[in-house]
Structures are given as structure tokens and as C-alpha cells.
Image (tube, rainbow, N blue to C red; front, side, top):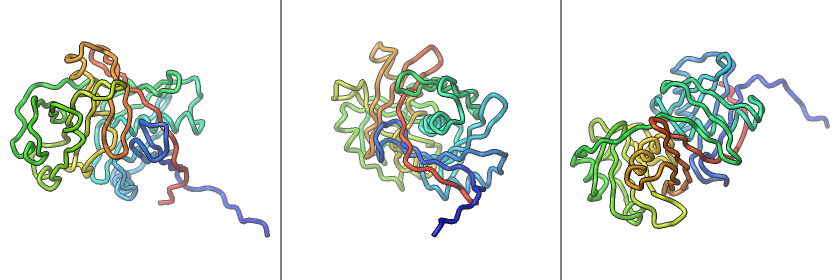
Length: 271
């Protein structure tokens, strides 16, 4: 019996694990490659359906590509791992030649991705941290006693050891109720000589209790740790259950984030 075939009419859809080279580690993202504009409400519905920390939508825009990111509950203006995953798809699936860079137009401006050996590098804005007292309710929800607290786009809490970072078990209901909390980074020096620092990232207010590996958080972590370590090139490990490695290089007001990615699945979105 001859198998029936049909012409594909769906939207290309990929799931990619970012900031890792092994399946089922790093941070998963869904990538939809669009050939026409779609309403924001539709993109948000797809983000909720995918139910990953980020779903990215890529659309050809002249010589560049438009890129938007959605959590299950909201659109965000910067996402590292889904940018990495999107660039990986552009090269892996032949949308862009191997020798070309990928330039995304986003709500955070133009983001350029390029290849450096086996690493995908992304040129992102640096997000400096200013010392600021974190709300007591936030610290209580995390159950830690930080040695430093700061804020910019996110709150950042420095603790004494990697063991403390790994042991944190937040009260997510309480954390969700802290006003003005878009995300919380907890970080410490690494006890592993392969890495300069470790971190975890929590954003229950954006529908993500714990993000496995967070590129945008490293836009804060890179200038923070560069000042303390007197280094411009560093490697961080995000110590979530899945875990992931982020290379960071500070260049004035920019951060070059680097990582690897692997495709988990490819298919079609029919809606």
C-alpha cells in the first residue's frame, strides 16, 4: 500500500534546547517561523499552548528578521535562550547560509548572532546592577540572607556559596505577590573551577517559576561579576534542575553571550 502524502500548509515549528549540546538539558524554546504577520493575541495563545518558558516568532524583514518572545502569559522584551534557539534554527534549517550572521530586530533593538567555532554568540545590551535594598517579602520568599542586593531590570541577590544557591526552595506563591518583581537572580562564586559564577533565576510573575537557563539574566550577571572578578570574559553555570552553560564577554555597554543548542523536534503548527 502506498502511503498517502499531502502538501504541507502548516507553520514550521521547532523545539530547541539552548545553552547545552545535549538533549533534555539547557532551556527549551519553541520557534515558529512565520511568512506573514500574525496578531499579538495569536502569538500569546501559541505561547500558552507551547507552555515553555519562551516561544519565539521569527519573520523575514528585509535583510533582517523580526523576533518576538512570549512566555505562557506575557510578551517579554528580551530573551537570550530563545534568541540562541532561533539563530540555531536559522542556520540548521537553511534559512540563512552557514557563513552569514543573523540580525534580529526586537523590542530591545537589533541583536546580531554569529558563529565562533561551535559556539553561537549573541550581541546583547549590558544591564548594570545598582545596589538597592530588596523588599523584605522577596528575601523571605527565597529564604536566604544575601550579602548584597541590587536591582535593574531584575533583582539580584548575592549569597556566600554555591551550596546556598543550589539549596534555595522559593515560596513561589509569596514571591508572586511581591509587587514590581519581574524576575529574581540569586548568584554566588562557583565552587567548580570550570565556571566563574553560578546562578538561578525565578520569575513567577511572568508565568515561569524557575527558568532553566536565562540569557537576559546574564546581561546583568556579566557586568556584576566583571567588576568583582576583574575579568571581561567569564563562564557562568545556571544551576537549575536542567542546568546550562553561558559564556559571557563584556564589551563596554554590550555583552556577548555564547552557547550551544540542539534541536529536539521539528513539525508544523496548524492553527
